[in-house]
Amino acid sequence: MLEKIGGLARLLATLLAIVAGFVALPANINVALVLVVLGLIAGLRYKPEEAMSLFLVVLVLPLAGLALATIPEIGDKLNAVFNNIALAAAAVAATVIAMRLYNNSRADLAAWMPAGGGAAATA
Image (tube, rainbow, N blue to C red):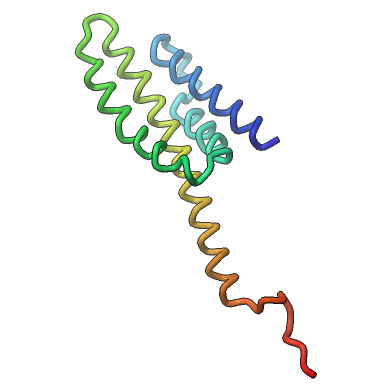
């Protein structure tokens, strides 16, 4: 179920990033906040082996957007789309990092616990 919810959040974030780049949305919609929330939810479906490519996307998208901004007429809109997607990807990365810290902390605590999970038996 988590896979479906995370996938839906990623899809909605991508669609919102594209639409918000090309269309002026009403002022009462905080696009950045919605992208961050959707990104945080989408991050729940990422696996640790996907983290490095995700971090690369977060770094490269704004630079690619700047390069595309030089295109007349549509460049600014493409730059906005790339920056919106980068914002959502950064939120995904934040979730991945938080999950990694949680798992590391849990493993560190487990190393200090007895193997049986309870008090040692005496005989």
